[in-house]
Length: 378
Image (tube, rainbow, N blue to C red; front, side, top):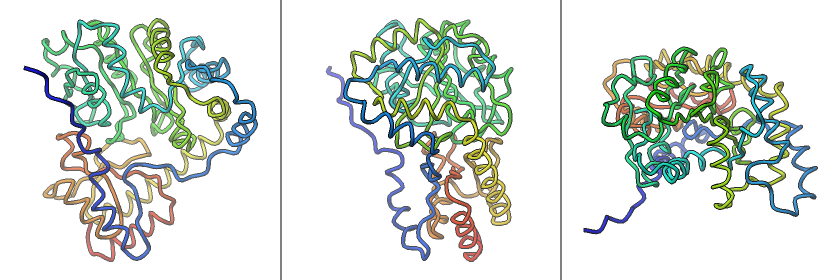
C-alpha cells in the first residue's frame, strides 16, 4: 500500500486569526504578544555594517559563512560562555527556523539506521515538524515540574532508535532555565546512547542570570543553535548560526552548499557587527526585565499566574483557579485587545497555559493591563 501523501497541518499561529481580528477592533488597537516579533530598534552599528556591505554584494556569499562571520560567532561564544572555539566549528544559517526544520533530514541522510527525533513535550512546534518533514518519528519527552526534560521517562526502545535529541534552554514557551549541571546531564545522557544533542540556545542572552551552554561539556556530538533575532532585534534579517562538533559542522556545511542555503553577504556583515557589540544586548535585556516586572505586577491581581521560569522574554501563564484552558484564556484576552498564544500550540501538555511575549513597548503593555482591569478580570 502506498504511503499517504503529506498534508501540511494549519500553521500554528494562523490558528489565531479569529482572535487577532477580535483584538484589532478594540479601541486602542491590538497589543500583539503572540508570536514575539521584536519591535525595538535595530542597533546602529548593525545598520551601518549592512549599508557598507550592500554595494559589494555582487557575488555569491559563502554558505558556511564568511571567515569574519564564523570568527564573530566563535568570539561571541568565548565572551558569553568562556569557551575557546575554533571558527571552523561555526556554521551560518538563514535564521534558525530553517535549520531546526532541516536538521533531522540532513542527519538522517548521514545515519539512516535511526529514525526518531526526541524533543521537549512543550516546545517550539518546528522540532516536531522537522522530524515529520524528514519522514521520521517525532517523540515528545515529558517535562518535570520545573519544565525541564525528564529523560528518565524516555523508553529504551525510543532511545535505541533516536537519531537526535532537541533541548531548549532557556525554554520557549515556558521561560524555564536549567542549571548547568542539568544541561551537562542531558549531554551525558545523549552521548552514552550515541544520540546527537541539538541544543536550541537562541534565548541565551535572556536567561535571567548567567547562561549555560551544552558546549561546556565539550563539542563531541553536540550542536548549539544561536540566533540574532531576539538579542539584536534582527528577526527580519534571518541571521543565525550553529556551533559545535567539528565533524558535524563540516558535514552540514557541505550538505547546505548543495541545497543553496546562503545567508546574504550584507546580512552576514550586519551579523558580525551585532555579535561584536554587547552593549545593545544589555540594553535590550533591561527592556525585557522591566516589561516582565510590569506584567507580573499587573496580571497577578487579574487572576493570571506565571508559573514558568525566570527568563525575561516570555510569560507562561495560567488562570489562578486552573479552571480554564489556554484557548479560553486567550479568547478573553483577545476580547480586551491583547493577543497571546494558547499553550496547546506548543504541545498537549501545555493546554492549560498561554504564552505572552514581552516584545511590546511599555506603553502598549500598560494599555493592555488597563483594558484588562476595566473588563474586571482576565
